[in-house]
Image 1 (cartoon, one colour):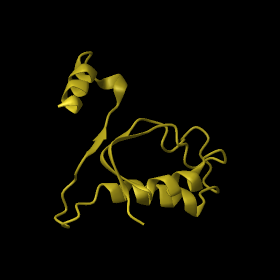
Image 2: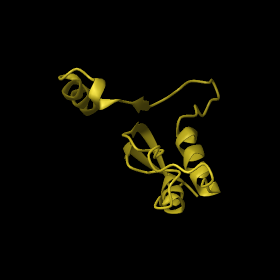
Image 3: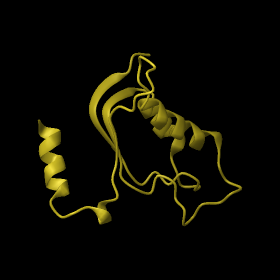
Length: 104
């Protein structure tokens, strides 16, 4: 299946490791797209409700898809288009600067 190009993908509140996670649906969607930039916005793995005994294969597949977006197609071990931000640690103007940079 050919993947649809997407400029920006923001993932938030996935809650891997919990019973309420919709991992199967997310994997299906992730397999259908190819984002240029990926932003992981928090609560990807839910450490508050995480249960060691509960980690279905679908949760691992979500992580594989996310990592797979970051693979250079020429296999040069380059990391392309992955941005991870801890919003609380950013200076006040950083988000505005980031928004301007994404518009270019």
